Amino acid sequence: MASATTTARLNDVKLEAVGELVSEILADDEKAQTTWSASVVWNGGFRSEAKVRDFDPITSDEPEGLGGDDTAPNPVEQLLGSLGNCLAVGYAANATTAGVEINDLRIELEGDLDLKTFLGLAQENAGYEGIRVKVHLDTDASDEAVRELHEKVTGTSPVGHTLSRPIPVSVELA
Image 1 (cartoon, one colour):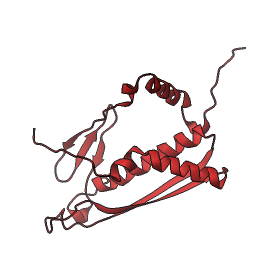
Image 2 (cartoon, helix red, strand yellow; image 1 turned 90 degrees about the vertical axis):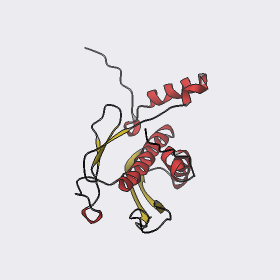
Image 3 (cartoon, rainbow, N blue to C red; image 1 turned 180 degrees about the horizontal axis):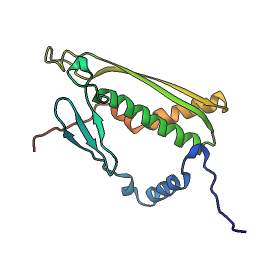
Image 4 (tube, rainbow, N blue to C red; image 1 turned 120 degrees about the horizontal axis):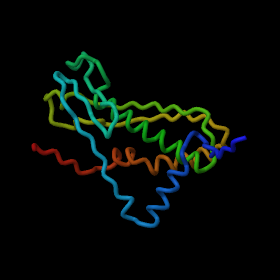
């Protein structure tokens, strides 16, 4: 009879990999400094594709009402999705390390955007004026554990932090 070694995975999170990364960073602070990248190729009209590592391209387009063909989410929708995905990772990671099982997690995001600057009709903020997020978390954990989890997630989200403070963005012609 063959024996098998199994590792329990709460919330389907690979805790060993996260633990190894934490150990590496504690041993060498420079390992915490990372650079991420993407490249984008225009495909005509308002269609483009972002290439990230070895994954299939992430397509982008605009709705028909904005002159696109509506073949994919537009960049501002993808930004909302990025925030939601980042928060989902945070909930999964932090719930798992706290021993909290997630039965279901849904995150709804919406943002308000004035199109006048994008359309060249004004010179104001072209970005979101505000983003609202509703987290629907189904767990058997106590209300206090859920509140602590929520505070930890919102306090450590890289995308959330990026969106909630001014950061330098440099765009140059090559």
